[in-house]
Length: 72
Image 1 (cartoon, rainbow, N blue to C red):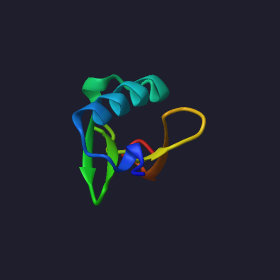
Image 2 (cartoon, helix red, strand yellow):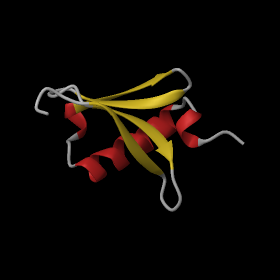
Image 3 (cartoon, helix red, strand yellow):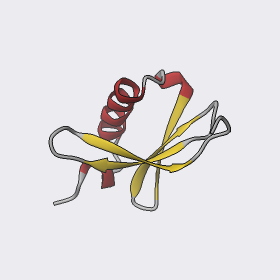
Image 4 (tube, helix red, strand yellow):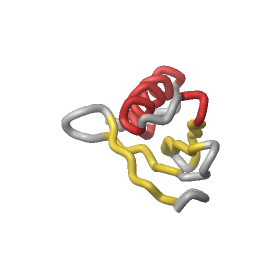
């Protein structure tokens, strides 16, 4: 069974975008989501911070910060 974070569909992307905005407090207009190397990534447009998206229990997703932004 494929994990959600490894599924490249618009439905999964929309779930990630809604969940990440609620989790991070960053408005959806201020980050982008990309599917690369078999998984989803989130990048804050203003700072350049980046997170990899992972499936989690309980809840749909968790985020691992993989790069620091300009404000760190």
